[in-house]
Image (cartoon, rainbow, N blue to C red; front, side, top):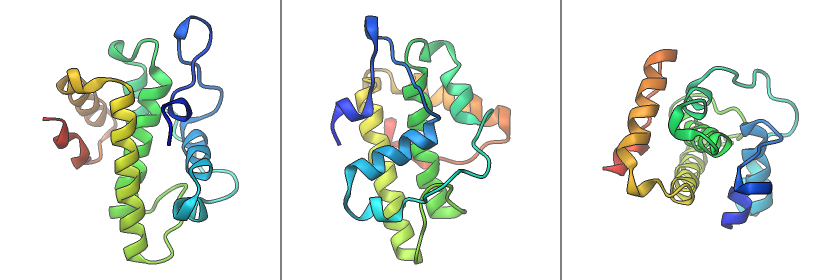
Length: 149
């Protein structure tokens, strides 16, 4: 997946997101092709998130100008988490092993998004933002962020 497909910019280099992050993630997975594209659910999402950890992180001061990328980053990792531990929203799991592999792929995509945001220079800042967001909404555990240290 190319950096261009991960980040969309408009005039002035400010990111703009025309569609919800889960729809954007679905599009990235379909565009990437391969096994993951065959697991993507088709149709409307039952309850697109409006005030979850991704939206809280995207609205934070450190996400200024890149809110859509932060939101996509957290939703990507969360979908991987759901594939491992709960019911995913946009990816169908035909069997448990395939669900684990798909979750791993989404974690890897999350790493690519993380790198594209150049956050490796300041990883503890994002970890704190996500931790605050999880505490505010009741939270979910994302072991991915432990990799940032």
